[in-house]
Image (cartoon, rainbow, N blue to C red; front, side, top):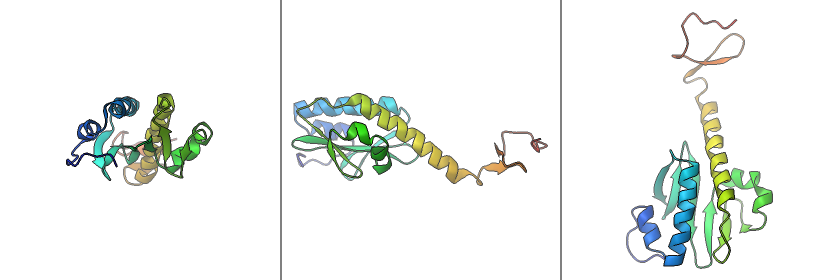
Length: 151
């Protein structure tokens, strides 16, 4: 890639290592992701900026002629139509550097990812923290009075 040979410890480092015009675009992309998912953890993973919130949200990376955006394949499938204008693969999209990045679309994909990850987590947690009454309703063990048998 275009990395200067300095260890990249965080997203600031990553952006600072890019050329000025690319850095500006990455900063916008970063802001779009963090405002769509304010509670997401920002880190460097596989040498690229990564965002996690109850699982993977998205990664991005700068290349010579495009920015790679990696929001995981289920989200690419969900936004297939709008992403069809861009080159990409199952889990990635290429935003060419000579065209404006579709930040609104990025925002919607990230928000969808937040929802998707939370739903997945809820499904995983059923049975751990949630109890089921005899009618099949879920309730949090601690959240409700013990005598609740759900009528």
